[in-house]
Image 1 (cartoon, rainbow, N blue to C red):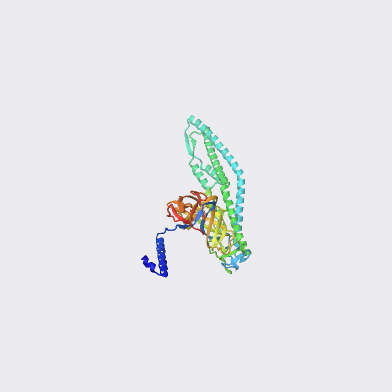
Image 2: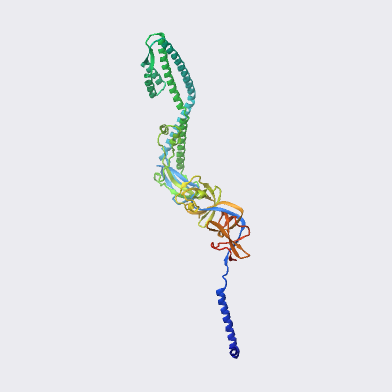
Length: 518
C-alpha cells in the first residue's frame, strides 16, 4: 500500500494526506463532543455585607377625602338657587346654593324657647336647693327633738303602768277617739303630706289601742292622757319626717344634674339649629378647594332629606336613667320628641387633604404606629405619606385579603389611615391604591439579597460559594427584618462571605458552579 502511495503523483499525495487529517479531526471532534464534561452552571453571586434593612407592611386601601364638608339643610326650607352639580370642582369661597329661610324660622324660634325654659327650670331648682339646705337642717333638729320627747313620755307611761298594776286596777284597751285621728290627719294635710301617706297613717292609728282603766282614779286618767299625748307626738313625728323627705328629694343632686343636662341638651339643639339656619340664610359657599360629590337640593323646591335623617337632640334618658332618676320624670323635663329633621344638601370633598383607609388584622395592627412613614402608589406614581390614625377597636370587616396575606384568620380588623403628602391628579377619591408602611429600620446589620434565601422543610437557608473550590454549600440561617431587597441575617453568615442569588432549592452540597459575570 505504501508502494502504491509512492507511485502517486504529488497532487494525489497531498489530497490523500489532507483527507486523512480531516478524518482524524472529524473523529476527534465527535469524540470530544460526546465525552466532554458539562460546564458548571452560572449563578449570580452576592456578598454578605453590613447595611440597613427597613421592614414594611404592604396593604391596599381606598382613597378618601380627609376633609369632607357636609352642608346640612333643615327639612322644608325653600331652595332658591343651586350653582353646582355632582362632579364639579370648586374653589374656596365659590357659591354653592341660596335659600329662603323664612320657611323654617319657626324651628329656630322653638329651639330658643325650649332652651330658655329648660335653663329657667334649672336655675329655679338650683335656687330652691340652696334654700332647702337651711330648712333641711331645721327639720332634722325638730325630728331629733320629737324623738326625745317620745322616748321621755314612753318612760313616764311605763312607770304609771307599773303603779296602776301594783294598785290592783284592771286595765282595758280601747281605740284612739276618731276625732283625734281626724284632727291629726287634717294637720298632716295642711303641712303638705301626700294623701296616700295620710290614708296609711289613719288606717294604722285606727288599729292602735290605748289602756282604759276600770276604776276612775287620777292615776288611770293620767295614764290615758299620756297615751293620747304619745299618739299625738308620733303623728307630729310622721309629719316632720314627710316634710324632711320632700326636702331631701328637692335637694337630690341627681335630679339637679338631670335638669342641668336637659338645659345643656336644649342649648346644643338651639346652637345647632342656629348654625344650620345661619349658614342657609347667608348662602352656602365652599370652605375648601374640592369636588362636589353630593347635591340633594333643587332650585325652586323645598328640601327633603334623602339620606339618613339626623336629629339635633339626644337621649337624656340614656344619660341619667342609670343614676336613679325616674324615666317618666326625665321625659316630663324633656317634653317629648323635639328632634329636628335635617340632611346633607351638598357635600364637597377636599383634594387638599387626601387619606387612604385600610383594615388590617391584629398581627399587623400591633406593628403600626402613628407617625410612621409610608408610600402610596397610584397609577404607577409613588407619593410620600404618613400614618395619621391607628384604630383602637376592631370591627367586622368581612373577608379581608390583607388579613389573609398577613396570616390572620379572623374577619375582625382595625382601621389604619394614611395621609398622602403631595397628591396630584393621579390620586382620585374612591380609587384603590397600594400602601407600603415603613415599620422599622435596623442599621448596621448583616444582610443578603431576598432572592438568596430559600425556605424549605421549615428552615431558612442560603447556598454559600467557596471561591477556591468553585463549589457551593448549604447553610441554615436565622433571619430578621425584611425589606424589598434584603433580609437581615441574625445568625449563620459572616461579613465577606458570598452567596448564590436565586439558587436551585434542591442543589446538593459540593455542586460546582461558575460565577456569572456581567
